Amino acid sequence: QVQLVESGGGLVQAGGSLRLSCAASGFIFRLAHMGWYRQAPGKQRELVARITNSGATNYADSVKGRFTVSRDNAKNIVYLQMNSLKPEDTAVYYCNAAVTINTWWGQGTQVTVSS
Image (cartoon, rainbow, N blue to C red; front, side, top):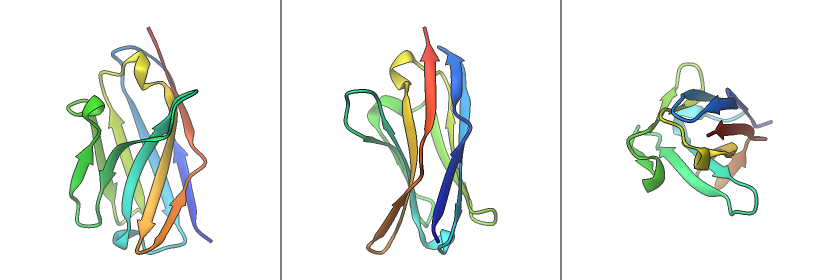
């Protein structure tokens, strides 16, 4: 079955960095468009960054220049490098995979940025 397992979250001070990883299995990873979303308490889930199966990327305006999404098709892993973290980046971060009409979600990993 499809599994998306996020890791790398934690507590960090403002200005610090974290790298999230999402290990994927159960589908043909190289065909999938992969995304990172986040949801803060009381807010809707929002797109943070996305990387297509051809490697094209796009980012939310709030993270442009600070976050970088990348993928390793040999390892079936998508990464989110987060630099210059701000308290407003605090949220649960979710990995998403989309292949044709199918989409799957990971369980999420908590990122907390202290001021």
